[in-house]
Length: 426
Image 1 (cartoon, rainbow, N blue to C red):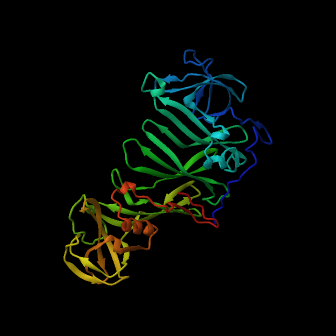
Image 2: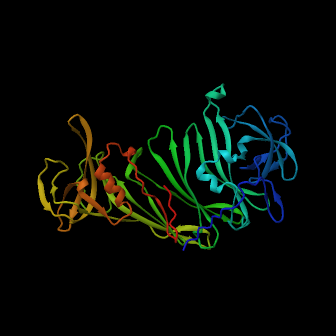
Image 3: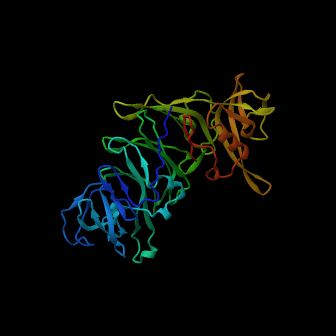
């Protein structure tokens, strides 16, 4: 069984964390380097400095500049921070390379259980401390700073006994869009009694109607936080339109990640061998049920895909007595009468916008094949999708018949952890 190893500590009210071998200061003035940073003698780039610190170095903040200063290379503005390093050296570091601890009262409620809490990741981070930090600045488009859009990055930082930190970007916002944290969990997925980090994020790009969801799995390897797996979850009907199936479903078991989804694809790429009765590329999509599996390779320290994705037909049954039609239309010829609970192979989704009085609506049909071999169209609302984790979502979609797919949503989870205690997040 998977072991959920996130430990709730008693550090919320402490201003520092003391390890057996060394005191690691972690208070309201803590910061960590996100990459190699240079320590300058003042808050400018004018004077050369050969003093630098590697990614993960821990600092104590002493002072910060009032104004933001321009970074010509990135066309952005950040503050300068006066800091003291663990070797007692003092100087200034430009703010694009520092993640500064977020004050307790500003930490989002969903993240409070991870802020200033203990975690065991092994590999040099057995007795580590988690905290939430951010980089704050502005994209530099205007002379007046108040007109410039906010640039912000939020990080989960993990600091070990020696004062070295690793970090994961969990959220952010800039002129191009925003990235939001959907879920953060710690689960022993590889069976080594150490936690892996499960991170789900949702990004929204300016000018796009489609929200992109991602799952990332991280683990400690040789003292480094490595990305073990990344899976794009969002399903699209076309470039900027959400699929009725919304998102891939991911099941996590011991050493195994199983992925499944419903693919609404151009019928030219349909692989099941049934006649698709092509009518219109813009109004129809063929449907396939897709699965594939990753397995943990302990020797290589990676998740490897076991085989090529498997594509099969989607299946369903009739809900009520109904007729199989020759074309996707109320006025079409009835080909065959169907009884309730007749088994169907679902081939194609077809949609047509119609006016009902003065109201625009969309009629959804499915091209199906019966067990007796007859093929025709049936109203999608009269079909119950069976035998896949997307059945509930699709049945809701076709029953409610939304006009705009991008406004379609569901409460069903996309991530399932198969353990004694089911851990799911929206």
